[in-house]
Amino acid sequence: MPTTYWMYFLSEIQLIETYKQATGEDGFLDPNNPSDVTLATHSIYLYLMPCRLQIWYSLLDDEFGMAFFVGKPNVELNEAMSLSAARRFDMVFKCAPDLYTRDKNSNGERFVMERDGKKHILRLESFEE
Image (cartoon, rainbow, N blue to C red; front, top):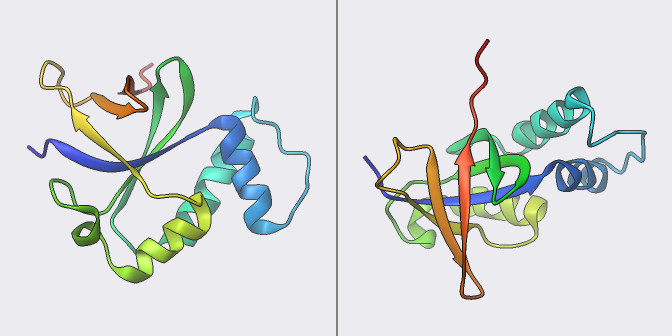
């Protein structure tokens, strides 16, 4: 099982703002409305394709949003994805992805990322009835 992944995390507010900037639409999208968050996420997904991409509902520390797993795991960033995919990611996210390490004490649903000397925990969410 891979241990390192390239990932972007966008909170619900960031998803809506990214969607508005990308489309130029100022509509009345609400980050508290799950349908609006899904619309924004799906639109970003369609723009980024074709590429290696997975999107998960997730919590980064205590903030709910979406985790965008991009490129191949366990490789350097310049080997993880094609140049055209990297350009699309840069146009949407305006930065490089963060490197996350899978928490070996979890079943693949927890990841750790360090930024500015501080550890951040990303937890993938699943919905069960």
